Image (cartoon, rainbow, N blue to C red):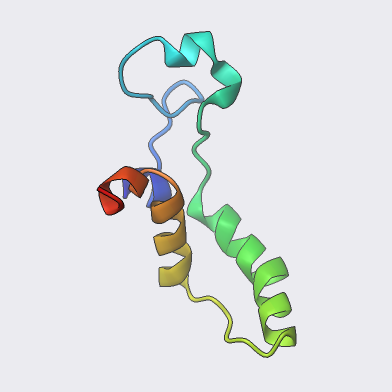
Length: 79
């Protein structure tokens, strides 16, 4: 939840859990982005395309749920 909604960034990075993964593969690590960045993209790019296609626009709860599912909660949701 924290990573998706209000990431706490330390020294310009979101802390990874355990191991040397960040040191061995820094480009593969996730990057904490503020929810407002995705909210703006949703309003600017995604929702107009959905409306044009005759679909309902996304709401904030769907945006958060999508980020949670494709990110930090994927393994828990699919266990």
